[in-house]
Amino acid sequence: MGAAGSKLEKALGDQFPEGERYFGLENFGNTCYCNSVLQALYFCVPFREQLLEYYSNSKNIGDAEENLLTCLADLFTQISSQKKKTGVIAPKRFVQRLKKQNELFRSYMHQDAHEFLNFLLNELVDILEKEAQAAKSDQETSSPPEKLANGPKNAQANGSHKDPLVTWVHKNFQGILTNETRCLRCETVTARDETFLDLSLDIEQNSSITSCLKNFSSTETLNAEDKFFCDKCCSLQEAQKRMKIKKPPHVLVIHLKRFKYIEQLGRYKKLSYRVVFPLELKLSNTVEDAEAEYSLFAVVVHVGSGPNHGHYVSLVKSHNHWLFFDDENVEMIDESAVQTFFGSAQEYSSNTDHGYILFYESLGTSNKS
Image (cartoon, rainbow, N blue to C red):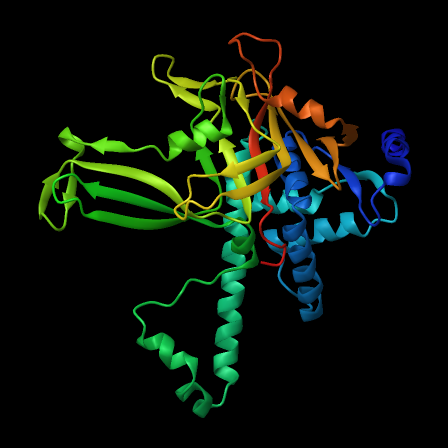
């Protein structure tokens, strides 16, 4: 344990980043799905900084009740404030809280890292929204009545709806998709916006993230029993539909749909397809058609041939070095090693380590945006 840590310190030598900490996470039986995602989130620097800031502010409040957010903030604070540069930490409180909160993660079965990430981000948003709501009602009850009679409160009451709260989780991960449907009879385009915290992409053999994104935004014709009800024509009409990215997020999380339900088999099968994910990604299928540029900083990798067993590890880029996190173990890897996790060009291959969740950070905006 100590030897691996010192080996990493030796490998980095004088290049060990000032103030940075590289800690492995202990596995409690089957918690690699959780550890791999936590490492990716820890090295999502804007998210980490805002979480640590939240923690230092909430500590001042005193007896905040324990929840998944306080446990995560506590864990990240524990890592970042270690005296040693490397080592192992047991995320015991966080895992206990997770299991208490969601029965899905209670068993010793193999869990899905993407389901965990999704649950975690949504849970953090819920907690932050509830806290903001509580703070607002405290403010309202403590404000003198004449203050409430004027000012922005009234403006909001007159609006048709109040804007949903944008938390720092949203500021990092949330993007907006627009679903455009064009009636083929009257040419009217109906657009519906929806938010996302990650994009789940269908994959094909020997493809790339760029081609998967193109397929995601490709035009689909709605006809026969799938006709679209056009409000202008007041009837069902043939239409064309497509999904575009209206507002790209600051941190783009891409989930590759490697687990596919096979009707004939009556079960899920893992797709080991080779899907190339570049270190630098250009998003061209945005509504504004302005290219959004991203840089890869973390990959959660599924190791194993099937969906119900296997292991998760993560690759992380920190201060221009790539690191490999496998529960307690942390080691340096060469940037060229990242391409060994694209997948297999042949169906039956001995390589079962495949990129599953990709984390890209926008190059176009500053961390504070």
